Amino acid sequence: MAGWAEVAAGEPEFAERVKRLFDAHKHKTMATLRKDGSPRISGIEVEFTDDDVILGMMPGSLKAADVHRDPRVAVHSASVDPVEGEESGWPGDAKLAGRVVVVDDPENTTQGGHRFRIDISEVVLTRVGSPADHLEIESWHDIGGYKHRRRS
Image (cartoon, rainbow, N blue to C red; front, side, top):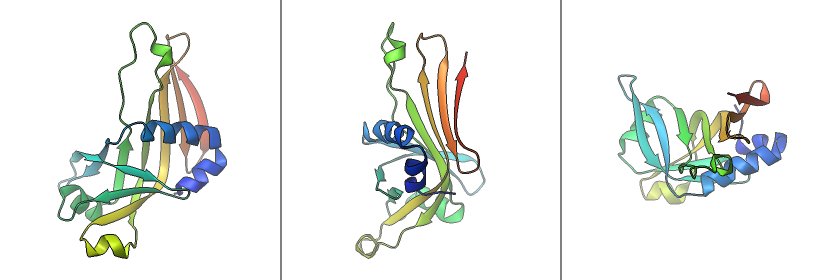
């Protein structure tokens, strides 16, 4: 698993486009696993630092309980619909997956909150190609690195 710095150093242009999609909107969605193993989707805010992707969670929240029990997460950028007839102009959407690790943040701890960084295993950016008859899927994996695929 890797921090954001490793992704950005290995594929800077790809990482910048992923970060831009995440930064375009304040709210994202995060998938965690409930106690019984079923998925839970929650709203989340994401902060990119030079080194890491940081998540903050309210004390006593179900998503915080989920990740304390099982640290696997997937985070999805907010997405907007492409303009009809201009699908190739759609910037796409981005996803990250990995495991969260507690960040020692004395200022936040005194407020009872939780801060985590993501040890990243996967980053994916999906967009409509030009012409708009296929998808362009770019991905980075901690094992295997960067790949670019076209799906019709």
